Amino acid sequence: MISFRLSPGYLTSNQPNLSLQHLFSTWIICLLFSFCLISCGIKKTQTATESTGTTLVNPALPGDNPDPSIIRVGNVYYATSTTNEWAPYFTIYKSTDLKNWKLINHVFPEGFKDMKNQWGENNFWASELVYDAKQNRVYAYYTAHNRATKGNPGLQCGIAWIDADKIESGKFTDNGPVIIEDECGAIDAFELQHKGKIYAFWKNDGNGCGKESWIWKQEINESRTKLLGQKSKVFTNDQAWETGLVEGACFFTQGEYIYSLYSVGGCCDAKCNYKTGIARTKDLSGGVWEKYNNNPIMVSTDKWNCPGHGTVVKSADDRLFMLYHAFNKDYDVFVGREGVIEELKTGADGWPMLHNATVPNRPKAELDFADNFENDKKLDLVWQWPSKSQRPAMSFSKGLKLTASDDNHSLGTFLGQYIKTVNFDISAKIDPTDAKTGICLGGAIFKSKWPGELGGIGISVSKDGFTIFDNFEGTYTVLKEATLSLNAPVELKMQISDNGKQIAFFYKKDGEDWTNFYQTVFSAAKYVPWGMGYRAGIVVKGSSSQTGSFKSFGIKNN
Image (tube, rainbow, N blue to C red):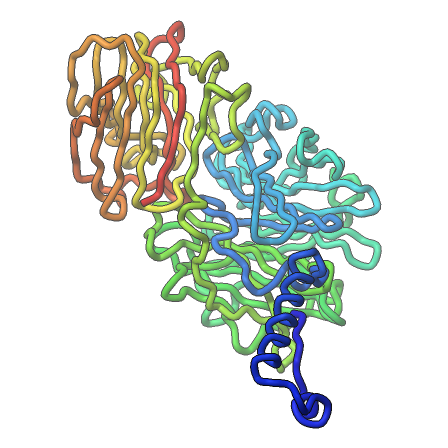
């Protein structure tokens, strides 16, 4: 800030004949001059410290973004997250300030079709980005279940790569599964480049098969296609506070130490008890890790539940930030685990610490979404479909034409996206066709065999009228119908309220007011998928020769 000050001497010896009015006029002129300088562009250059200042915005990655990972390439940050049982697989976000993030790509935009030999079937977990400066490549480690292997051993860690300058629009090349544990499976891979060598870390999924879970380490070759030498144990959950299992370990260097932040406990549902600890070593090959005496360093608070499983990035000015996931307590588990960012600062005892007091401060208006399909030429990156299915057939011509089906327990073809609060409106403008075309809240079939078994409740329209439907119990059920002859665009709306426990359904014919068509109590806790949040989306039910025609779609958070 530019400031001016009149010294006492100025008022006495230097200007003995000045009146108070003149002094006041002089002060005003100086003040106006200072404002002029600022408005004309004379301003302090923003530093890296200011650009990643303390006013971080959370959630950094709103919606269902578990197990996030973050890297920096020059002055740009990239992040990724688990997509679980949804395609496309593994998000790629971009930011230049750690506050504003944009979804720019996916590791596998076409789902399993982009994977080597289409090897992955489900459990698309824990993508981790790493930048190899020598190669100018970004590698993505990830977990998936191999469709050729039954049970826990099918959980394997694959690796894909892309040239760093193509990450925004290019396609990753998949090396396929590289880290394989024959007994219990391997998940949560991570890479550390240290003293000229490249090390891969992972968790054997012992808790999934009645065994101990450990973090393991092994050297890997430069092309990330083959592990080298012998694997060795890093650490396990051997302290009283470390309940159940250890997983989600990330590694970074600071000073003379290599540090690891790791998570223990249950991660992913309303019964979670996730916590985060820190350990360190001076010798990566020695195998001796010192765990912090005051662990855990991050636990649930009055704002966030079950924080953990993240990674650390160093800014250009040598500050450390951790991107991790947590449930917003205001939303129960219905939104899913969101990406939260905070700075690590070194404490008096020399250990990097998290303040464990982050608050949700992202403005709700930033969470709204609108898609004018009439202006689109391709599908927005936010849209998802069930992970075991191919990308739904669609085209764009004066709107989105989505091919109908009787998939998903007769729900139909579904495209969805994250919900970001628990009180919101879903709306769409639709040209009625022969297919039942509508909007839907998507979750999991009750007592489903796997979390990706899609169920939903919603409202649809066809040329013959309106339908309220629900298949969460596994059978497509009509809750209410209205037979009408429709040949002009109509609008549909679902209003989710009472923190996800009430749903009201509306329709609006051309030139008329909204009609309150149906209301119901909704058991959000019953149908929320394990490890995931609900999806808000569009649905088309009918034969494969039919299409639904969408003009627009929106989500408004209340």
